[in-house]
Image (cartoon, rainbow, N blue to C red):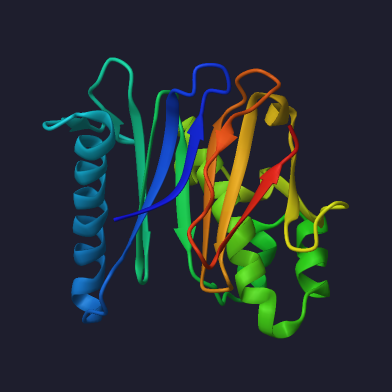
Length: 225
């Protein structure tokens, strides 16, 4: 179990959220989804016990709604993709999604993206386009998992702008082009061009959180405070 990112209350230094990841071994395609789901749930259970003292937890899911942890103060969300399982736990609602580079047809890309996003993808080097698409996809999915809408919400109604930060040589900025932008906060963790992991949480106050350092090989992008 690897901790990707932790957020602490700036006043009390109380742990407010944490994102965990575990690599999934290669498996036969028929077993891959089942194995990944088990890894994600095992990761969630280990994280709940290790950092939040919860040894036994019940997760419920009503029809068309996201899974919910039965707990008075904790929330959870999980995701898995080829090679990686991710779990997020926090003292507020959250949504998390993980993807490797995704090669998709242009027709599907137009369905998922806003026109400005589609143009931006077309401007990226061909060898990086699949990973750039995954970055957009995980931000959109993290938001719809946060709200509980999931794939019922057309991704083409959610716009993001990824741009180079003026004060950084490595990190990009994230801008959510939506009326709800003032209510949510995004963090995106990148492992080279191997995995994109995006987290959406509520925007609680103007100061944000104190954040932990990411593991070696990972870079953090975020929206503005």
